Image (cartoon, rainbow, N blue to C red):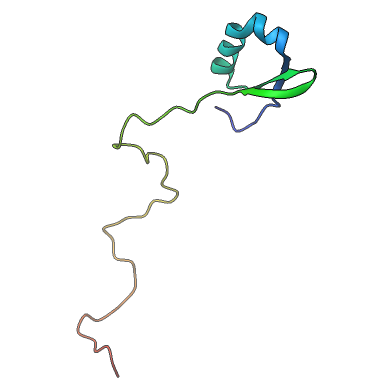
Length: 86
């Protein structure tokens, strides 16, 4: 799905009833949202369902923002035997 959010399309109840399956296909294929109106007042929303992760493994894939070398020293110097209290 793109980052650009489209304005929801408004459809009257009679048109929704006549073209329900076609509208559901559009929502799935295009990722758009449809607002169903009755007497020009919104009464329902038809929106795509976000895909679920297939499981635990890989569920956080793509969530890492910055990657560092975990093996290289951090560059800070410290002494392991340094007393904590002076």
